[in-house]
Image 1: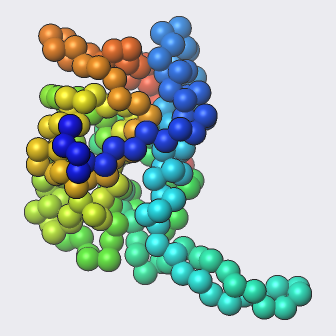
Image 2 (image 1 turned 90 degrees about the vertical axis):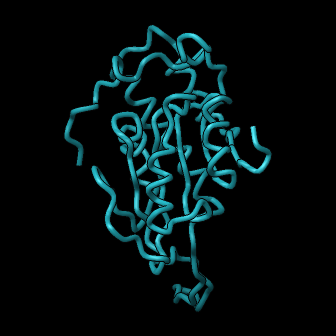
Length: 205
C-alpha cells in the first residue's frame, strides 16, 4: 500500500463489537442491518473528530459569559452514499453529521469550494471500490483533502487500487481483511450484505 494513503481503523470497542456481529454467520438479518448502521455511526463519529470545521463564540450562561464551540455552517457537507452498502452506513451515520445533504444518483454539475464531501462506500476490494466516484468528484474540482471515505471493511488489494490514483485519500474502515485472489472474497469478511441487509429497500425518515 502506498504510504501516503491514510487508512484509519479506529480502536473504538463499539466498532469492534459491531464488526464481530457482522462477521458471525448466524447473526439474524435484522441485527446484521443494525450492525451495519452502527458501524456507519461510529466510523463517522471518529472520522469527524479532526475534519469537521467549528467556530468559537461567546455565549451567555446563567452565571455569566463563557466561550462556546459551534459547528461552522459556512462549510456544509454533501454525502454520497453508494448503494446499497453505503446507504446502510449512512442510515446510521446521519444523526452525527450536522448540516449535510444526501446525494443519490448522479452527482451535481457543481460542488462549491467550501463544501466537504463524505463518501459511504461498499466494501473496498480490488474489483469493487469507489474509484469511479472519486474520479467524478475530481472532475468537479473536489480533491482528496475535501473528501472523507468511509467503508465497512477493506482489503489491502482494494486500497492499493485507490492509492494508485488518489494517494492522499483519507479512509476510515473497521478492518483490513485479506482478499482471495480467485473469488475476490474477503477473509474472514462479513458475508454478503446483498443477501443479509434487511433494510436495503425500506423507507427511513
